[in-house]
Length: 322
Figure (cartoon, rainbow, N blue to C red):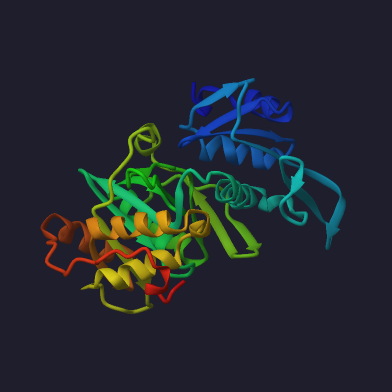
């Protein structure tokens, strides 16, 4: 059964009892919560995700509950607890959905170390899998949303999971989080996108989350092999421009976005180098996400592999980004 099969009232009762076992990508998350708005938001954003009750196993156990001890300027507070550890200082209850996503990201980053993890988006269409490594503020999530609602399959918005031994991406199609002006950009251009309620004045500004498309969630069991790597950079007013980059520059950009590289050492470096070696590599400058999505869709079918191959080395001193 999926979340949408449960009426909100029943879903809320299960959440209060800690009996929600939500599958997202390869992970099962046990959720306990007494926050009405947070429960309603999860019910909407994860509507197409698989849900079981009283599962004997969970990768992560999360409690998202009210806090009676902390108030700030009259705002009631909430806590995010994972495995009995408080992950954040108590935060405004109306921000619970955002903190759930950030906290779950932290759980994956700290414990799912079978994967080499990158702060990157990933999308796929017709066996073309595009990896978008980028720091915060680069327009990555806005571009990802534009691609996904233009027919691409969402693999991940925030955490790209790569199995080092196979080089394949494991899908983690969770809600896409947009910030500030990006919210209106996507809402105006893609009215079919299902948004959760906006959350104002978080630690990252004004945010809103979008429900991942049902098809992307249903295909989470299908891995993807990276074929293209694009480093996006939003610049207000800029024309959309795709520029070839060397594989050494692409590898440097990818390693700058690696979240658990130190745990893999030489094997992690080799896996990242192999990923870059298989990909056509470009830098993307854009001022309009729709134009950028269209440019990528036009470029990918004809992209060639004429750039010099990157010679992988196990010596991490070769990459100054480390």
